[in-house]
Amino acid sequence: MCGICGEISFGGRADRGAVEAMMMVLRPRGPDASGLQEEGRVALGHCRLKIIDLSETGRQPMVDPELGLSLVFNGCIYNYKELREELTARGYRFFSTSDTEVVLKAYHAWGRDCVKRFLGMFAFAVHERETGRVMLARDRLGIKPLYYAETPERFRFASALPALLAAGDVDTSIDPVALHHFMSWHAGVPAPLTILKGVRKLHPATTLTFEPDGARREETYWSLTVGPRDEDRAMTEADWRAAVLDSLGVAVARRQIADVPTGVLLSGGLDSSVIVALLARNGQSGLKTFSVGFDAVNGVEGDEFKYSDIIAERFETDHAKLVVDGSRTLEALPAAIHAMAEPQMSHDAVAFLLLSQEVARHVKVIQSGQGADEVFGGYHWYPKLMGSTDPTADYAKAYFDRDHAEMREAITPDYLGADHSRDYIARFFAESRSASAIDKTLDLDQRIMLVDDPVKRVDNMTMACGLEARVPFLDHELVELAARIPAELKVRDGGKYILKEAARAVVPAEVIDRPKGYFPVPALKHIRGPFMDFVRDVLDRPAARERGIFNRDYVDRLLADPDGTLTPKGNSKLWQVSLLEAWLQSHGI
Image 1 (cartoon, one colour):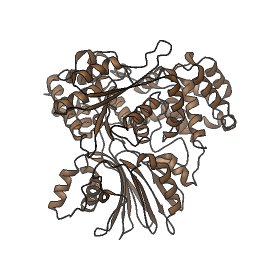
Image 2 (cartoon, one colour):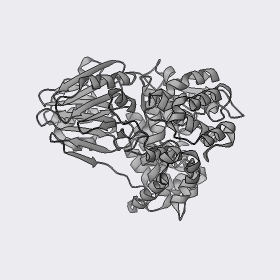
Image 3 (cartoon, one colour):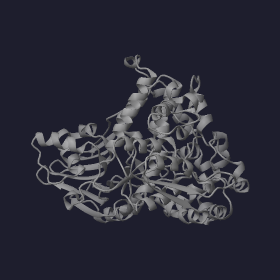
């Protein structure tokens, strides 16, 4: 797990100084070592977090003079040992024990198709010395980020958007379409867009190849269709339960591979609890687990320790609880906002940052439960889509933070435009290969919302602390299995029915049948006192007023009644508006 960056020049040598500037921003993602390689028109930079092969033989950029390849890699290939054996049998010789070298050799052996053989999370760039070709790739579910900025003279890429800003020559004007998505879609902005016109991000499951003559080719190497298959008609509910538990057990076991200590973020919910239970079933003992809790505000509880304690005691984990008072939450807010590769409104970003700071003192790798709700149908709006005859309207009503009418009230005419988010969903549903409304919705959330909300948030906050987060619910083989399960077995009884029933074999019932929760930060939902002062200060600064994204009457209405202006999902519209402005100010935009 690391930070990667680089430049491809379309005329002359690559700019070493620009790559060095990007590396400085990426340093928290890889605090253990760094390296930079220049080779004419291509320069590659790397900041390393040592997880597999802690020796210098695993350093990056990794260069294989015999094969004529250079590589920068971020992520983990969980089946790298099996691939290494296969490559060794083909005659390849290895100088390290790292998964990085397996990626390099696999690219030489299989070219672009090497990505189809990888089980894991990854973003990488490989340069061919002889041909000058450069290929970039991103994993199937978009767990690892890859941003880029380009001009007619050059193409730059990095693991985080702010790194590209540090390199300079980026159009930092606000993208109106991305802004509409941000304000509609709980701050999610689908690839390739970002909130800035001059920065884009590579789609998940995609390779991007540059030829020396400037020609480029972008290819999707994996896709998913959500919905039942004819060959599964004989599968009973019991069969699905067993298949889910077995596949999840494999996914969890895969993610224990490391040359450093590992742990689990234990929220007390079903998803993290079943990870702990399956690790225990696999023979893991003395597992380190970590939970976080916050002050209650306005009657909203700020911790779920009573549930995480049940799991910690049942499976005899080495458990640590982090209790955070309001003052520490407020103190951490600027750092959490600055650590965001893109502005993210979800309240629990600061929770993940504070928890990651504590966890990184004990382990360098953790497993987390992100993705279960999207993969197994856990959200409250999914049952509403069962049998829908107008999924676009029903999804927008259930999920969007604002409709377009309110968008006209919120956004100034220079930034408004069409109803971009609703149009995006209509196009997605029309093009989706899934048949039913609920399966189209699950397809949408797995490919878009999941990538650009929970997965991105966890990556950003953990990596800001030099901590690698692994997400077994996004093992692509588990995701493919879940896609085939009939929707009614997912959304029944409020959601995640089949996962809950599968988990009963290993998880206590009081955790499975508890009310749904998440990492709650009540102070950012019910904004009071010093948090209101923080928000008001951000929105009243000259930079915010001069930028002119939001109509001031709308901002004043949110400031006057923050609790009366929550989104349909119960989140603070005031926090969403102020978070975007705070992020822009944090990065000097």
